[in-house]
Amino acid sequence: MSELVKEPAPERDGVEAQAAPEQEVSYGDTAPGTVLMFPALLLLRFLGEHTWAYWTAALIGVLGMAVYGLGIASAVGSLRRGRRKVVALAVIALSLGACVVFVARLVEHF
Image (cartoon, rainbow, N blue to C red; front, side, top):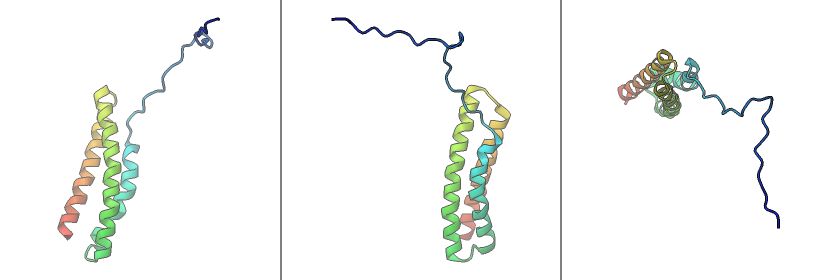
């Protein structure tokens, strides 16, 4: 009986296999949340006295806050790695600012 011996994978042109590069934080991390949050804030601003508009804005805004949460998590990870600190801080500030304004509008119309 012969034993199976695994041979190491051949190198391609002398370059070892590299891991996928880590995604950098950018201002684009706030775009999906903004797309959801902007209509929610407009609904609260102009049609907030209607019940249907209030609840629609609340639903859309909560989804936007969840997306902002993902962007904040990405920015915190970038801060921990020490990369693009100013952009990461700006993304965190913009995301948290939009969430605070949204919650303030919700409470105001409640």
